[in-house]
Length: 99
Image 1 (cartoon, rainbow, N blue to C red):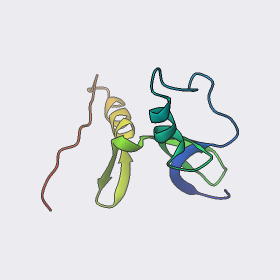
Image 2: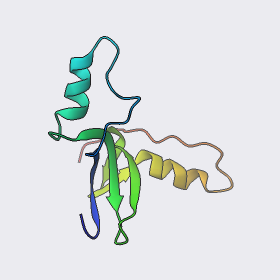
Image 3: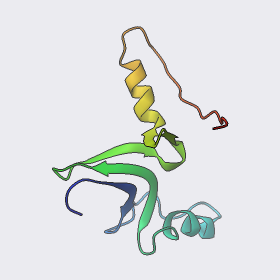
Image 4: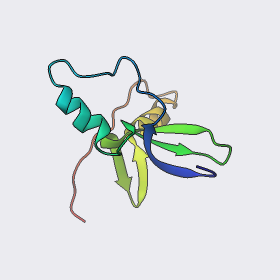
């Protein structure tokens, strides 16, 4: 990829060694990490690539919130909150609402 991009983080060169299978459930391992993008290891993370080709992990795909069309990772929001000197801990959770 060239330039800025956003999407799922996948690994094509090699599989991380600690992640060779799931104990007593190899089929689930294959379904979870190798069926989403054929031939690639799907990490479950969403990331951005900036114009200098640096990658920024936004967060887990299952922890991404759509706020007014902006995709925000819960970890990203929590980090912003705890950067304030009056905040020691933060947790972002989903709360469904009607439009």
